[in-house]
Image (cartoon, rainbow, N blue to C red; front, side, top):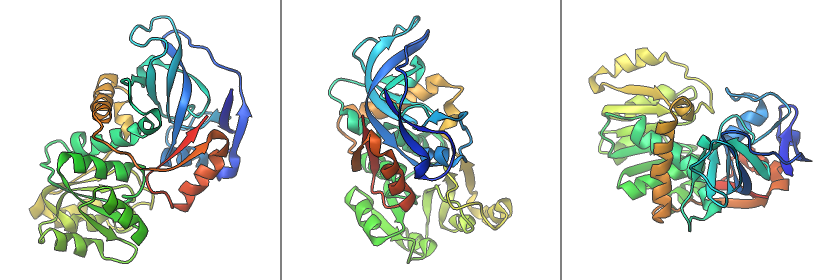
Length: 326
């Protein structure tokens, strides 16, 4: 089988299109023949060697794929040959034409679901958690999300559109803001040229938003507190721009009158809770099956062009999701 493997960490050039032996399904596993692969920021972190859950090298990269079950190991009863599935794992291993995976990370997909579009479900699962799970107790009627043109950001916008939540989308260029508006953002802010806090407050009549979804952090992270509504929450789900300059708790105390909350979120929160993981994925799969969600696809490339996909991610010129095909 063909796969994308890396033996050292670095830029896209470390990715190799290689031949590997076909795996077989062991006990508790299913063998999945790939239909599509999702490429995202975790793959860049894996490739760069900074992912918190790094596999030993050499390793096959990738966390997301869809396909059909072509082998069933002993002890697996809920998946059958021919079943369409999403495989959403962590720590790589997915970007190969054949995957032997634990059956509990293979999610059955209903008939009629587009398997290319379904490879975006992991982004939507994270977006669902940000909007519905990790902010439990916060009455979310308005959201600000940065990195809004990427895979998770665009999924947040799409879910907010479906749920009737006002979403202010932040992005780094006018083109990305236009894209965010086209897919359903209520308002957009170009944080390359505009003051985010001032714009959010102006758009919300100085109230602020109930939920700030921040995947950048960076030196000015604590400025988010200024545009938070009373009893609102900031959810950090990545740290692409580094850590804040100011002491977070001191800044929270400075905004005590709002009773602000700050939380970090990782999908790995569900590693030890497969039932909760399955429930979240089920919520998203149901909405895909209903046709209510429309993931934007930036590009579809052959698996052999994985380096090109990573170059796109590194250049930060993605509008939606990049998909690889076997």
